Length: 496
Image 1 (cartoon, rainbow, N blue to C red):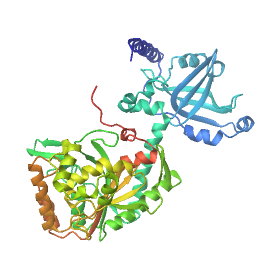
Image 2: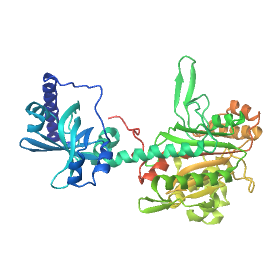
Image 3: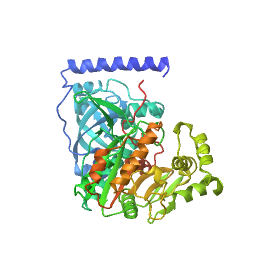
Image 4: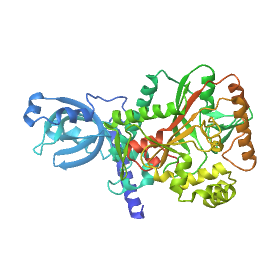
């Protein structure tokens, strides 16, 4: 912001505070407890907007609606202005000879951004715009700062994320993204509730981090003198519940990973995880298709959704592609390169030096991230990755070096991750010990052994299919937004 613009805003702040003082001196109730409301603005426009001027006059429809003043056009002793509920605008008209001189003078102390309640009768202007002819305008809240200038202030991405309330005031489409997000979560709950799943809540602070290969946030509990970690996934607790006989469970949870921030990653994110006894990862694929196809059709009206320059089709069935086939096909490397494990690890370390030390399985994962992900646009199940990077999944029935696991990729993003869950406590302990060894070597995404979880498995975890779906990324696709910050109300930002 230039010094000139900064000075102009300060002048407006001073002027608004002076108007606020005059309202107080005039005895106006500055902080009312409630407001009259007969309709939503959106409902008024939908119900009465299609009527003719004559039909409106005959109806004599009286309304009382609160809203934020978004435009003002004075015409001598009368004023046209628009109020908004964050979704829809409605024009209002106040005239001195009807409202009274005192009320009209009081109205003059209002500014763009103030919240008011307008009460009156609906009519249509000569230009055909639906309008409230005001009997009264009641003050509800004073905006002590000017709203951003429409075509400049609201293009400031930093401002939109840092002061989301301004984004919602000025950009109705931003509010629609979050209404869609809410509808997605509500649909997911209905989907699982109707299938006999129960929704549960598990701890957000863990004594031993686990459930995914990721670097955790660390904290400390003073009373217990105990190091704790913000959860990176609820998986190990949810599977404890299946051990206990809750055969179908799900949780819509907040998880935290101490990793980089980019268009697809935020350190704090929302995830759906669900587990069902007596199922495997093939069943999870079928259930995922059913969920996402139904979600698109229910909320967007069709299975095809626009995303950037692409049209994503959620029509069933989704493509299924093995991990190694995808890496060999998309990497451009000769198949013979994969037989020399040491050379492949060195090649991968050159691509991702921050991920050292690498094993063969993790090297393949680096190649997958670098060469494959961005090229998968339509919903595709990438199946059977290396067992080494899947410590909680059963060994593949087809290949002992692979895991019974899939990732669902859509538009170059991992949207879902699922396993035939590992149920053998001895094998799980060995996998945990392998991870602990990698941690000792410096791998910050590996974790120590969780003996409490191993003990739970020793009581018997039945065959189980489990899955996690990222709500933020799913919303990105359904709302056609390229950045995860567009679908998180308050994304993490560096302090000013």
